[in-house]
Amino acid sequence: MRATCSRNCLAELLRRLGQVQAQGQPRCPSQLSSARSMTRGRSVNERSKKKRVNDLEVVIERCKVVSKVLAVVDALKMEEEHVTPLKRLEILRPQLGLAKPHKVAHFVHSSPQLFEVCRDSRGVMWAGLSPPAEALVEEEARLLEEHSPTAAEYVTRLLMMSVQRRLPVDKIAHFRRDMGLPHDFRARWVHMFPELFRLVTLEDGDYLELVSWNPNWAVTEHEKNMAALAGNTNASSNASTPGELSLPFQMKFPPDFKSYYKFRGKAHHYVKTGNTEQFQKTTYLSPYAEAKDLTPGSHEFDKRAVAVMHEILSFTLEKRLVTDHLTHFRREFVMPQKLMRLLLKHYGIFYVSERGKRLSVFLTEAYDGTELIKKAPLVRWREKVLRLTGYRGKNKNIGKVHESSDSEHCLFGASSSTCDGGSSDDDGADTILHVESEDSDDFLDDGTLTDDGEMDDVDMDDGQMDDAGMGFF
Image (tube, rainbow, N blue to C red; front, side, top):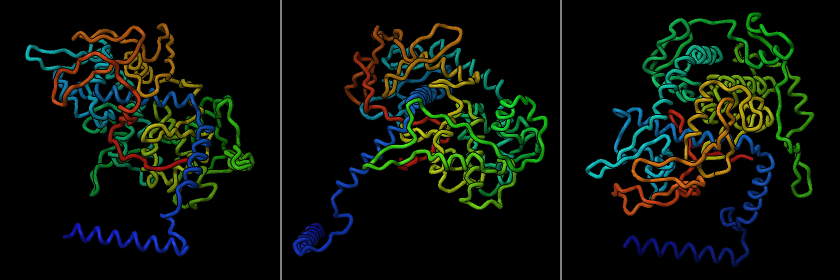
């Protein structure tokens, strides 16, 4: 009865719509042709391509691959003897972006230098870390321990920049891998430096609170860099109360970059010279100074926000962050509500990559082509992981990792044999595993793993948040 009524109502609506159109009455916006909006979308896409920095897009591809690999490594580290039935790893399917019928087994089997896959006497497939991967796990633990004092300084300086001198532990956890914080960050590490900060519990959760103010740490990395260029290497020792600064920010553009584009016969500027000069000359408050009285939207407010983002990115290992992690600190660091608009406006200081479901922002001055100018030991450790990885992601042409001691190898070269008879081709082609049924344990069939479409681009950061869901350019 209800279905008949619904069909009758729909027929009546269609009849009335036909009468309206026949009488020449204007249609509502939802009824208008989408041809115009599609044309605009193509023009926006073309403009985006012209602003794209290909070298940094290569870096994004590398970061996405290593994030997925480390997600599997971390899961195996939690298992006894670092070994688990292969089926148990299927819980990682959403994190790795695997679409059915492709399974985590495909991903694991593509990197036999990191993961070993064997079948027991009952026919059950097991996955574990290879000896080189075990050595990398031990090396990472040592490097994280050595990096702890530096990480503690950076966390303290984040607290010093915040309005109330405290930050939610959950939000700091988003920076764990980016800032080189250890795996036991919540349970042990937050209690290791009681002279710097302490853990407090409030009504809305756990917070890390500043214990003591260090004036030598209230000097931004940008101030130190500018002082070093001027020949003063002791900027921190001459620190005073944070106040107004008038420092220009370094801007870096790709070699073929043009400051304007032409659309429908008119020139539109990405970077307006006059606006840039005015911005560089603007005086602004230090990120460590009190900023409650600043007027949102003013030039001083915006330049201070750029300085805060510059400082946070300087604390990270790869001078890169997922944009979600910055935007969720707007209130604590007194930054504009439309932070992404500010990042995109200051193209040259920052670069926002659109690859993947979650956008990333780079500090452009920290890179020379595809390589970081200054590499921390933990960054070099990740490069070692990449050299042992067989999975390439969607983009096969993602360059090489430069190495000072060993000979240079292709970032994702040919893989060695697996313990269950699987092998990789000599030409470095990826390996696909054909699956006959969802419940089958027999994953190790021959073939090649197709990259396009099966594995989505998903970042593997701790405390993963929802996709940005925003359109840019």
